Amino acid sequence: MLVVLVYRKRVLIPALGVLVYYKRVLIPALGVLIYRKRVLNPALGVLIYRKRVLIPALGVLVYRKRVLNPALGVLVYRKRVLIPALGVLVYYKRVLINVEKRSFNHSKRRTFHVKGV
Image (tube, rainbow, N blue to C red; front, top):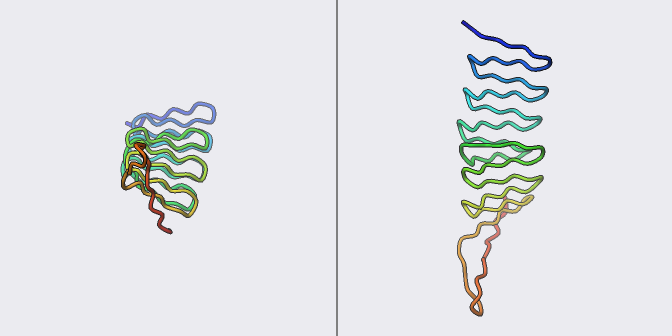
């Protein structure tokens, strides 16, 4: 039996785990999250943000213009994509990867390698 609940502009289908709220389509059972022009699929670990395709992993939280993935420490904010867990920083068309740490004058300094996308 399919249990369907319609409340105002919300359509809830607990049996299939489907939640439709305004312009959001949430399918927790399949792990699919569609928010405005963003398509998030935590089950497959796929994140599509504007013209970028990121594969962080599971556990995605969308809040306004921010996409947070606390599980892997992934933060997508405006045009910045930060992945502290992997030490990867994607900013505009640049890819910065923190691969090592060097010390100069008894102080720690991070070295970034820039690679074009």
